[in-house]
Length: 117
Length: 113
Image (cartoon, rainbow over all chains, first blue to last red; front, side, top):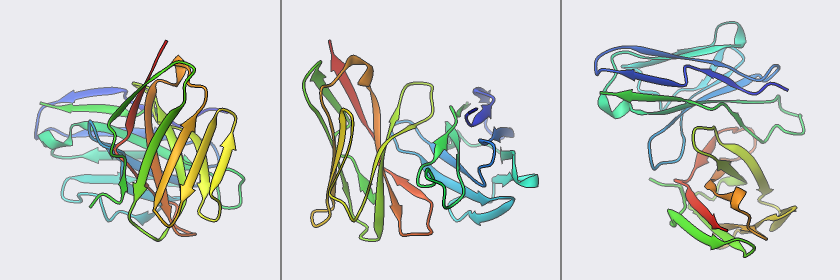
């Protein structure tokens, strides 16, 4: 079974530039999450999708961050304009449907490491 | 407000000995707890979990203990192996129907051969 795919693996940009990350969840996983992990911290939820609808984006800085999941499969997370404090690893995760034996677990991709200079 | 706390940033253990990683939480609504393991440049991978209705769950060398009254859980690895060297994250879920996880800051385990 293919895992959660993310690209790019690394991105270096200057502050005030824009950047986009892409995620392809595990096939059939209806729920998709974007997490931000700052160095030395645990992952922090940014946004949760169920199919192509937003379940929770309360912790997403909406003045600069946006995310979409068109067609309920792939997702993109965008930052515009980036700030120095956005330097982090951006992790995408997906979860099987409720009722699945594994539905308590999130499956993570390898992440995109963003450096804002 | 750190709802899931891992107060030990790092832990070193000799190969073959027991590793004990601790986690405390403050939110009484958490009903399901998971441990994730993370190697450098990789995403976290699920290790073991426990429901709040249990006090112990075992899977091979890994055992998780939950003390609800103390709002404390621990992960035991016996025997520890060099390949266990990684960052371990404790995570908690808040209530049925809420499939969001709140993570601790992680503990870096180093198993010395």
